Image 1 (tube, rainbow, N blue to C red):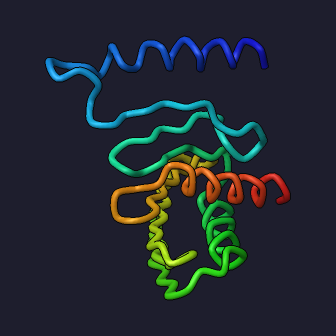
Image 2: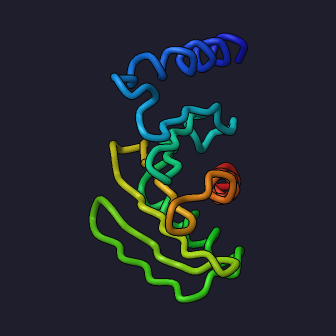
Length: 139
């Protein structure tokens, strides 16, 4: 656990240098430590208004956890669009438009990107990710 924390901390210090150019920090890129647990890889990437993370779980399990999260958060105007290896859920939660993109990466790795609002709200997206991770741990 301590080693993983040090790795994430070191990486978070290096990210600005890796992605900076003449203009400095690249367009709102932020790396933050994530939630612990069996369902998530533990690292979140916030870029262009979307908070992304990889979950160590099959695509169908992550999709179900996303649907449960939207339902528990009293999502309205829910429009799920699921294909073989990707899916999107559009919803309105607490008067904010929410978009969840679920993407298959490998047998037990699924990426979820969440955007809340037009320009993104990192705190609200983090809350949704935490709920998804909770459902995955319960399974």
